[in-house]
Length: 338
Image 1 (cartoon, one colour):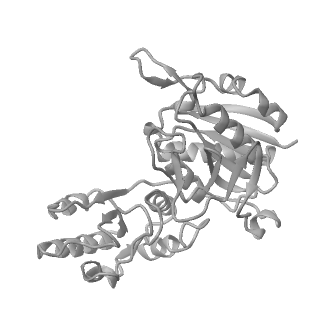
Image 2 (cartoon, rainbow, N blue to C red):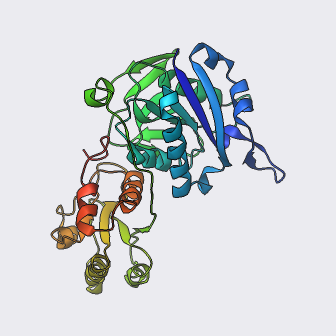
């Protein structure tokens, strides 16, 4: 039997009703496992609780702590399951995909829409299936297991707030599914990672010196000037394939000035789209192409926003040189760039 380490971080799956009547993550790892005794038939396991947080409070320092725990225990276990709140689970999955690369061992994130203590809950199924997948023959690297689907860590996004099918794989197929306790693999891991057993690369420092600005019609471009004094990288969620409004003559100029200021200070501007699928391409329309040839602007393409933000935090943890940031940003990691 494979040996899997359960790492708990809180979230709805480990919550019970608090004093105010709302759910609060309070359930211990042992309590969590008591609700899924069938896992003992799947694998040997240990459990460790490293935090007990609502996932809205989980950020870069917590991602680094998760990666550190995996690093310290990597040689002792065949895989890892992380229970996590659903609200920021996709960000954590993306972050771990960059901090722990080329892992031949699976790092599986799961959670639930309802507490494991409720009768009508998805928690027990999701947790059991996370262990089943983590112990399966072709499991490797960072994955999200939720509602019987297995999604790449760089492609997961929460798309529903209440339904059990809360997560989708954005612009990439689900890599596997679970049916009647069995894993059906659609896409197997890269041979270099899985068969040759290459050592994983850990790089766990994250620097969140970036800001995401979502465009709305009529946005005052002066907001960009206020941001450039605080952040090293500005991510702009533009319209459609990456269009910027140019009816106001000062708007493109403000973007250009922001890019100049960011690059002169060692920062960059990254353009992406607020449309959920198919990504951005600045050269598609004139309203975007006015910036497409500017070396200070990176195009997010078909990366998810979660992947863009977490990749940039991971990059900033390694370098502040604009040229190196650009090189690392455009280097594909676990199909984040297609």
